[in-house]
Image (cartoon, rainbow, N blue to C red; front, side, top):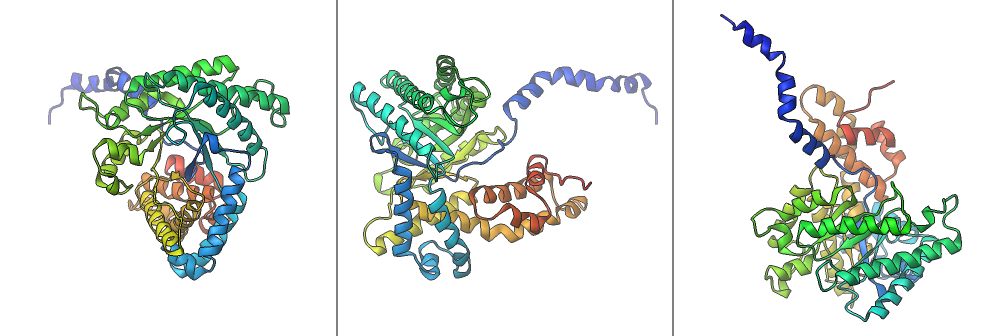
Amino acid sequence: MIYDQAARSALLYLAQDLDRLLAVADAQLSSGYAGDRHGRQPVHTVYVPAHRFAANTVRLWGAEALAAQAEFAAEPAEFAEAFNLSTELAEQVLPLVQAKLADEPIEDLRIDFEDGYGTRSDDTEDAHARAAARALASVLGADAAPPFTGIRCKSLEPKTRRRAIATIDAFLGALAENRAESGGSRGSSPSSQHSPPPGFVFTLPKVTSAAQVTAMTVLCERIESAYGIIHPRQLSFELQVEMPQLIVGADGAATIAQCIHAGGDRLIGLHYGTYDYSAAVGISAAHQRLDHPAADYAKAVMQVAAAGTGVRLSDGSSNVLPVGSRNEIVAAWQLHSRLVRRSLERGFYQGWDLHPAQLVSRYAATYGFYREGLSAACDRLRAYAERAAAGLEEPATGRALAAFLGRGIDCGAFTEAGVAARTGLDRDKLRSVRRTGQLPDEP
């Protein structure tokens, strides 16, 4: 065989040529798809209208949830029936749910100034914003405080744009004043006392364009400047996906993908809005639900657009509330449990809860999902290195197994020590597998 020696020599420089040709694409991939966001993701977001939020709201939600569980699902057999679990699994999950409702009933609290709050005079909304901020400061200093909090402002549409800015300003101003008066958290610097607490996020509703997302980033920057909030404690926000224009725009493109990249590292989540979206695409009220095909389509677009970006996904809510007779409450619990489980199976690890008794079904279904898969995930991860060497596992599988176990630990379905005993991996090693897809080398 005759080789062209000159052509072969040129191959030595091919990589440099390809580096130049692909420089822009490489940079876009690196900056736009940085991988999963590390750290804990809450299993739900609880929305409470601002005018109903008080310093005792979180405690009352936990107490009402425990009371509902004690009255209608006190024994393992009742618990199993209400939440679609086997009796064996119910015996494991019941004490975990009770402990969770007592210690940390709400993981992510959102004080709502939008649909759940309505339209009020400027003076009234300003007053409610300041009162809610004072109440939140009190909640954060109490036992069972939510690790994640925030507010849902009104949209950046023309009619509500100025109101959204004013509400954010009034809320943060009162929050900063309250923290300054109390001296802030122990060991905090004077500048940090003007910052919202860790885990604080804005929810931006009714988004229809990437331009609105860019505007929200500008708003966050200006607020940081006004309140002396310095990096890395920068403000972040999430988008509600409740308008069809956000899924497919007039140009036929997936607007949601453009929004994700317009938001940069400030955008941390996408939350599906069940009822606004369903109504906007013409679904009648009787058939608006989380598992409607129209909802599944929107969420599939969200999922593909967010993949690899670090932007997290949340499913929406069920408005079939556990109220009324025992039969009505159990039926609502069964429905909610099924929907929560369905979301988890489809890669939506967070959802909305609108009623205290929904906390019972949220945690029962979530803990059941993780504990049911615990043994298989641990066994498979323990054998992962050998199977990967034989070509039977991909790095993506290792990442998925570690992510499953990490999420289960985060929400309280099982303990770090329990997972380490089954897999030989402590939390740091589990994070490494989740990040790289490879088991760390033994020392």
